[in-house]
Length: 154
Image 1 (cartoon, rainbow, N blue to C red):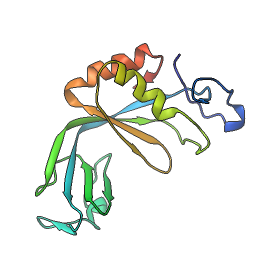
Image 2 (cartoon, rainbow, N blue to C red):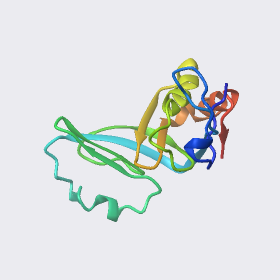
Image 3 (cartoon, rainbow, N blue to C red):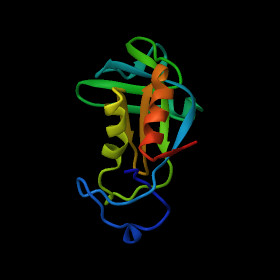
Image 4 (cartoon, rainbow, N blue to C red):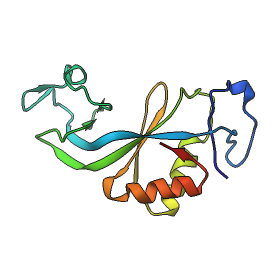
């Protein structure tokens, strides 16, 4: 059963199963270019001359995510960040539209066909929406798995 998201309000969404998922039309938009996931030590404040605080302003890429925890600094960017462990290349997909926090099961519905196709996924959520990254060498397989599950992609 393909899940989908439209610009309808959450009051327009009909309940569906499993996991209390609601019926919504999910449209995925592929981001331009490759992405790299870099891991740096938790105490990193600058990386080879890159100020992590100024990083979002210095990169004009379509996607940039910086996450700091007590264990690490993870950066997803259009280029590898020097000085740390790097995984990539990856390709990114954005769930089109602003997702209401009350929606349940969006990531699950998107990850399930990838898991069935044995495709690894790296998920990032923002205030507005979700992003899913798949390894660049599996992007055709991921698109096919999503399309077979009823999702639309551009």
